[in-house]
Amino acid sequence: MNFPAESHNFASSVCLCIEASADSASACIVKDNISISEAISPARHGHSETLIGLIEQVISDSGCSADQIDMIIAGCGPGSFTGLRVCLATAHGYQLATNAQAAGISALVALAASCLEGDDSHADRIISFCDSRRNSLFIQVFDSDLTALSQIEDIRSDDVADWLANWQTDGLSVMLAGDAGLLPQAVSQTYPCCHLHTTARLLAAMLISDAGYLDSHPEYRLPLTPLYVHPAFVTQK
Image (cartoon, rainbow, N blue to C red; front, side, top):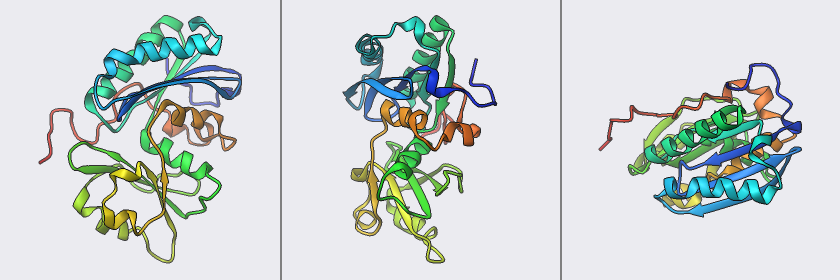
């Protein structure tokens, strides 16, 4: 089952967070509202070979047993097509084994939330981005309350600077959230950026945050299905 629409007592749960949509596979256990164990394997490919081992490692390191897990949070994209399928299939398997509640979380939402939690982030607009692996970035815009102001868009790298300029209007400040190494030079020299990587710990921060983002924005609790910007069979040139 997925998280119910009503509030869930996240603080009293044992939650397994897993992520494999980007350039690493990772897992994390959150217990009593604290991230207590984490494992990560940095690699652009091969997540199917490492993810289950990472999960077993964090369960062991946490001192919990698999049957204590009552929530599963999985990164559902956007990102690597194969990585997403690996992550979500694994989440489904552990859900069946543990009878835990489960939900997917968008990487772009998690990036924006982590940026908002930063001490130096007071921007009016948080613009999250991640790699499409097609010479473009997946981008979404949020306000300072984590309300989405745009749909997810796939913007070619050469067009990112012009696209961002459309959001810097009426004196509103803009902060980017994502891997700064993905940004074109013209963008990195113009906009401040919360340098963040998409990992299980990033998803866990959604649970730990005092802001209670998953309660205030239940629309961000997604099914365990890939969040595709394009149909899986489409390749942009």
